[in-house]
Length: 207
Ligand code: PCA
Image 1 (cartoon, rainbow, N blue to C red):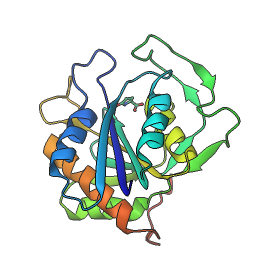
Image 2 (cartoon, helix red, strand yellow):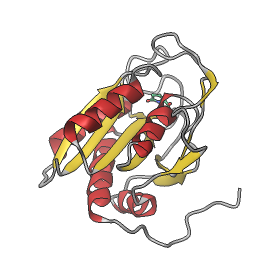
Image 3 (cartoon, protein in one colour):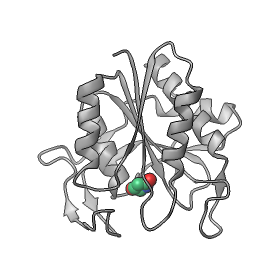
């Protein structure tokens, strides 16, 4: 197909909701093409999440794969730049597995860069009035595992971490409206389809 595979995640860590899954469902309603947008909500398990993503890629043959997940505590829509080939789970996944120091993709490289235009996406999201930033680590849990598999699958692939949706945060973590998260996903998908060469603007950090 010509288009985008957009994924979010189910709830995990005993939380009743996951804003990434909610926003992906809403993004499917907002999308007005012309390319196809296929959405899915992935399980938060090391055994199944990467396998399911690769099956969706094989089934739909998308040009772009955008995976998304919750990063509790972050205040911006974070466009991830680096997938590291490392699982080191600080909490059990939804199947009770807690692998330590295992590769996401056995035999793969130490890390991959996102292959979508991360700076163009971050700027386009911010231009829509939604707080956005670049991030250098997607962690070593299931999100990074899916990000690694997405890039390794050879598509233009990226990962977006989001804050809690408004009214969802279990403590006093930062929140953004789920409608804004969904809009950010639509903008990211549109930008990833349209922009092939990323912007050469400073986006790094001193530390
Ligand atoms: N966030 C977790 C896994 C699922 C999700 O939404 C993570 O950042 O790895």
